[in-house]
Image 1 (cartoon, rainbow, N blue to C red):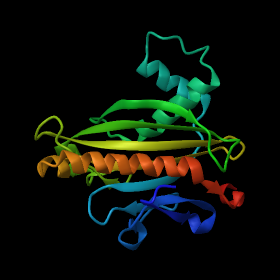
Image 2 (cartoon, rainbow, N blue to C red; image 1 turned 60 degrees about the vertical axis):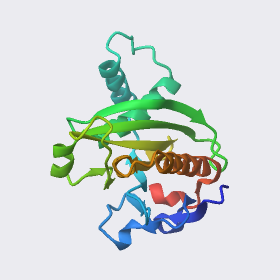
Image 3 (cartoon, rainbow, N blue to C red; image 1 turned 180 degrees about the horizontal axis):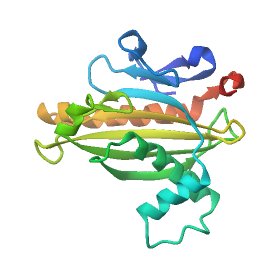
Amino acid sequence: MSSRLNPQAFYGGAIKGVIPQGWIDGSSLREVPDHQELFLSPTTLSSQIIEINQRVTPSETTSLLARLHPSTPTATADSATLDKAAALYHLHDLCDENDTLTEVVAPQRVALGRVPTANAYRGVVTMTTPKRARHQRGGSVGGAPAGSSAEGALTTRTSCHYLLVRLEAQETDLLVFVNVPQEEFEESGDPRALAAEEELAEEAITGLVEGLEVVDWELFV
């Protein structure tokens, strides 16, 4: 495990994983929904969120594929294709109508070190948001601060490094995402700090791939 990560229990110890070193439990600062756990960087606007979601159905993922790739047949999509689409389904669900989601690293199958039977996928997207829309909704991506002026003063952009764990028997999709708002780094003219923050987010997802563990499966009952 990276020296920049700390072990962390989620949901009262029912799940174990990691968070970046020194990050703060967001529930001590704001109300967090019961299905989420939120951790905040003490020095930047970056955040890590873990969510327990209802498992996305094949019909929902097929519908998303048809919308994203209208010229590609979806009737014969295999299970891996549908799983990857499930990751994008959850990420699109975080976006507002005027947001733009761009795949930076497409969903890739990974083997979880401590939940080997689960289908899991990691990847990276960026979410570009009109600033006016961001202010109207409180400036958040999945409940976390958002931001970056990649397309000028009218938009903000946030990198989202994610891990989707599909728990079929529990009818659950466990989603972890580490958000890196880019605006604060661009405004300070510090691309190295942004690169370091992106690297930390990547390390956090890698640490979860290696160490995420379900201790109490009753959590999903």
